[in-house]
Image (cartoon, rainbow, N blue to C red; front, side, top):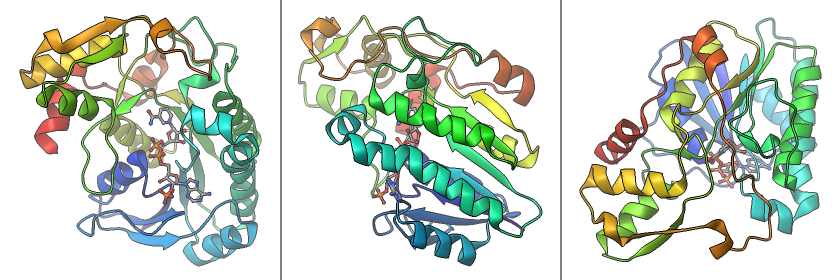
Length: 300
Ligand SMILES: NC(=O)c1ccc[n+]([C@@H]2O[C@H](COP(=O)([O-])OP(=O)(O)OC[C@H]3O[C@@H](n4cnc5c(N)ncnc54)[C@H](OP(=O)(O)O)[C@@H]3O)[C@@H](O)[C@H]2O)c1
């Protein structure tokens, strides 16, 4: 049995990953999260409530679980929240990673791997970016994740970094809407929505990230992998694709530019990630956007 500890188990990726990996009998999955369990009981995983910023709690957690693999998805994942709470952002996104690594390194376990979920926001403008492009984060969220990447890369145990982009996918009770659910719910109520045309991303179907992490575990891959979609699109394009897939009224989607939504926190206009290395190394085949949207609503 390979024991996998998934941090951020209550989160969007965390719950999907528990669901995905728990279908393989060779894994014993334990999720950890700050709040009480929100993972549905039909997803077969253990659950421990713990705050990973607490060094004592983290040590006790690792002593109890004795994981072979840690997939670290826990984070302060909203750039605006990071901007408003800079010290807490660094504590959650950076120092927690170092603490978790240090404690994991000392565990007397032979087969170990640490997989860290980073982001395209470690880069600045000029996307989509290649794995080895020079990082230049525009906001504290990106900076906090980049600093954490440095700790992961320097660790004396096998580590891997995945960088997803603008994830979407099915939700269930206990998970908040991703962008496509928001679009669908507004259009189903015949509400017009304003969506920006001048930001580019490579939106990622969440199951593709789970698939890639599974491959990285079973093939013991290390290094940095971009786990994103293949299509370079704007939020407006995603909204239109959602309306088309669900046969909703596309004319209710009003194209605007990001100057219509002045943001305190800088975000790259052209972000997104190239995925060729992941295709070549893992045999990654990202789900096409419209197929991902269809899967999202078929499964919800
Ligand atoms: N969502 C995206 O589009 C996207 C894109 C690129 C990269 N990422 C990265 O992917 C990862 C997963 O994203 P996500 O959208 O799934 O995030 P999410 O839904 O916000 O989930 C993060 C989870 O982390 C847990 N957590 C936060 N601080 C913790 C702590 N101190 N101790 C224990 N648990 C803690 C929270 O727990 P509770 O709910 O239990 O309080 C939360 O459920 C993050 O690292 C994020 O930076 C996300």
